[in-house]
Image 1 (cartoon, rainbow, N blue to C red):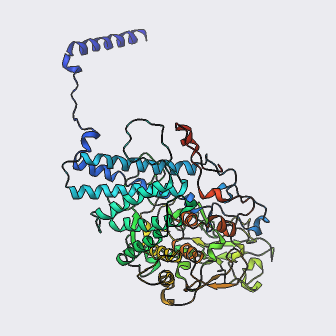
Image 2 (cartoon, helix red, strand yellow; image 1 turned 180 degrees about the horizontal axis):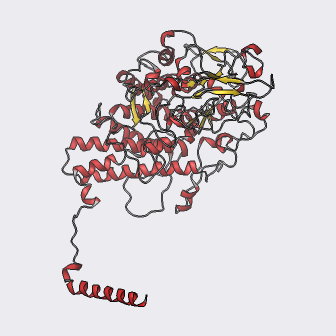
Image 3 (cartoon, one colour; image 1 turned 180 degrees about the vertical axis):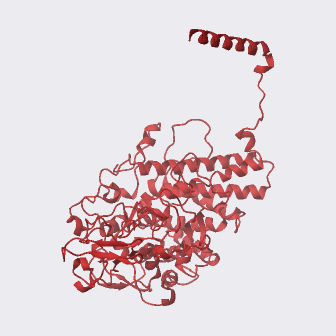
Length: 619
């Protein structure tokens, strides 16, 4: 062994001598293959185009970070199982986003993540804006268009941020050296900057983008309508808003209505699918629609098809809307387990019972599209034994395709034992669940199967592999239907000169599209959506006499359910506290108050700042 080791040492030493003898001074000379740096590359047309493209992917991460926008509102909660019938009205939810107690503070990760994402995007857009003057080889018109695109993205992020946090830092140029001093700027100044950017965008952006998915003139006009509407409400008298903002919101909403037609059917805006997984649609999807003004892209276009390496939230690079809403169909009797049939439902956003009761299930097509009320057995089940509530020896068998669950709409509950399932002494071989039993109140709760509520399938896309796979459908952020509701709200707040007439005319345009062949009918929702057992009904067709902010908020809930806006709607109109207390089912421990119209500044940002950034009141 010793001789082998000695021989090895000799060979290594000899090799080193040969290498050193063969070296020349030139061996140490640097011979770079390229002198290309970001400073050089971004001065070229190709480099600047790439810089602008790099501002688009973070839209995915920002809009997938939707917990703060949806949960803890009047129509979504963070978890199922809230039903008082199931928990005797005593349970306090472990998820702080529903009850706004002292756990809702500056350390919660959702606040930190959203702040980081928005300011990462603002930093990128500022880099592109700051570097634009150095581009000398690009046609001025094209450069103006690209700068306008990133100004829009910056304005959108500032708009999201100022609504969440109020006074915020407002960097407007590329930051090239480490800094700690980021003072908060008054909300009114932020709104001025947003509007200035968007007016510039409106003047320079094309009506039709060179690549589908890029920002257009219509996107700038739509965002101006939203911004003016929000500033007009003048939260805490801090936004610099006046009644003239409502007039401007109406004018811009009319511009959108003139340009972007409503889709002929509500369902044409979302993925095509069947309510029955056994007869699923497999053809082409509704990837584009003329009603869509701005959408986060998940198609294969080179502009937007890459996940951002700095943020791993959408690790698969696709749309996650199809899997984020509860309840889940995975636990239905006869379920095949983790398959693509019902796909994975992680249940991040759970529908509140009040939301189901805001629809007319009989004639409003949005109810049938948004919710799946019938569950099917995907595999045969022999001698299933439910709880012995009616017959301890009862056994039920199911063939593939048999109904296993029917969730009755709020306006048509079971009225007799005969209408119930055989498990409760009725005549049906499937579970029959009333609205007041949604969320865990149904008596069968330890059979190993999942009896919940209608599935929220508005965004469900068939054929997606189970697990962490993501969809390819684009996520609509602005669409024309909302412009009609913006116009209606602006008129209710005093705007004059609507092209279509009064607020009720704009409102009913959206409603009548939802009614389909029943256009012009008088739809009825629950008069008290918060009362699970009440059958009292009230019309939600608008008239000049009944049109109100609350009527519009209800219609926004029906039309825009699950889209990226609900908390903003409630905050803008000053209805957050009132409607959460009224409609969010988590009442035990509910601590929401006026301080929650603003989010806490993330503690990590305060800790890093110098001089220290101030915190919002109440946190």
